[in-house]
Image (cartoon, rainbow, N blue to C red; front, side, top):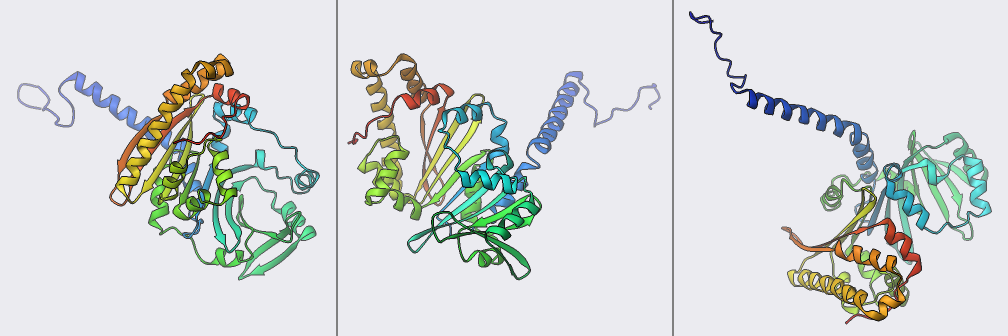
Length: 361
């Protein structure tokens, strides 16, 4: 205190009351954001990354689903109501009774890697959920086999209808690894692909999405090859539309990432297509913009308006209005990003109208 009785100014305390209020508000927001991060993401992100770290670096494609997160989203109920309900066969119902595990309610998170080995498709999966380990092991011992490999207990069970087997083991409480590869033990002991920067970087880009898939060039070439079965699958995935130019451009991509994230009552979908050539990326961007434009023109056609009821047409128009095509140039790839929103109304309308497989120029 000086001789006048006035306390000395503290440089850490703002002189202006408005500044103090602003700083206090900012500090409060920072605390709230920190709490929100730890409450909502602290448990989910480590679990997500732990599953993805098991994916082999030579995989052709990786799929990740956070079912626990999706179940909390309003859109998930609409999606379940829209999706076809396959009747569970007797064998699966018996499996649920014997093991106490039903994937629809007991599986929380799942990461799956796909590989092509010879003429067969191989998958490696790691899942978190509510598993009754004792019942599942008893089921495997009764219907398959149990063996040890370097101290790891590996269980196997035959796949109905063929000679192949499923192999699985418990990595820890609530975490299961499973594969259809007879080389399952080697995968378990080979270590994890945590140092693979190509996969890790793309996983990081979609960290906020509860469902996504990342595909490498090999998987894309196969999906959009000249093989009739592959082309039929590609047409089905695109709603019946076929375009030789689009298929050719997609087959030349180095990576394709597709991610979905519930936002309010909608599902926000983002596709990130990466090419080594700027020319290919620009052609893909132009083609996607052209397809969206043609679709809008088609919906305005009087004949189309007669074929579609008003609600269906409006749901498709809403989808097209949400379409955004942009370019992203990264140091190693040239990318095209396509974003759009899937609404509950679109899901309700989708079963009522299946576009014909009309080739696009």
